[in-house]
Image (cartoon, rainbow, N blue to C red; front, side):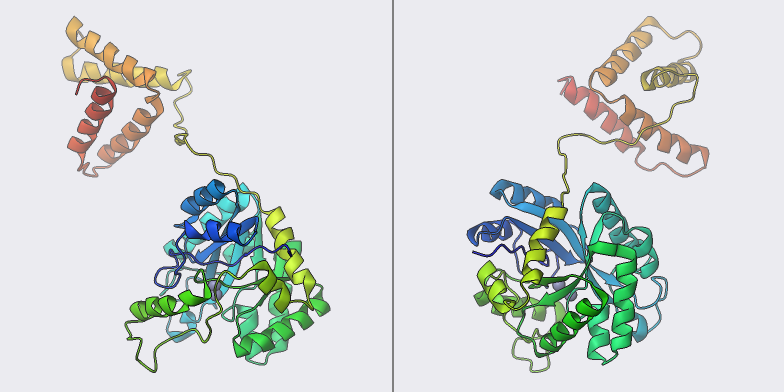
Length: 376
Ligand SMILES: [Zn+2]
Ligand SMILES: [Zn+2]
């Protein structure tokens, strides 16, 4: 059986477009004898943690990625139909730096580039490309659009830009989807590959698990576009081949381009993102230099707070109570948590910003302490 890895896969988090349940994906990969699989949802990474865990459970290597939208001009241009013509691009994280950069890019898509879709642009792609592999995507990829416009010079210039930024981690993506235009695009991509020495990779842009799920996927698209399945002019994919194909089906179709199949495995080998679970990761709160530890500073704040509330000579009962509360906070490892929450509440108050959930904060304090202390 040939080795093949699906590197372009949509899950249910490609909302109303992906019909693959996350938990089913690695199960299917394993059934078909594939050792790894990628997740590349449209513009988002909501599914990556569930996918990672599901893959680990099945002994399939998870590859973390995203099919991002790239604005045709800058991500800040949001003016009319021209800026709505965003291009698709597959990004895969090679390592944890790549994962961080991918998260950054996807966030920028929402916070700065959102226009119908979360969009990034070439400027941020260049800035945050480290640790990432780029594949040229489907027919909505910029290079494929240029090919379909008949503008090979533009297509080559796009390929050169990506090769220049991503070096050996840029691949021209050939798809096996039965769409007429794709056949032409595949031919032209092979020409560009030979001319510019850019490797090829085979994918299947999987939107559903099995061929027979194509109809369900059409229903999903109707819900997304507000159409009926009987509407003749509804948006539809002109194919029922966007499923998780077997390695044999992929290798058969690309039998004259074995490197496109082999490269899927090479790319999968390059991708090694590891997540660690079970640790609370808190930002470091920098305490003033004169305090050796976070605990010392928390203690000082508590002592000041007691003086503010009860004067210079608080009763023994109050001091004992403070000692008890601080000792619980320290014992439970909550010193940093309390400093961080104190920091933003204190800042808000100092700036005249209303601190609405004060009761929430206080009850939260009580909850943490009392719950841990079995007082409730
Ligand atoms: Zn696409
Ligand atoms: Zn896709």
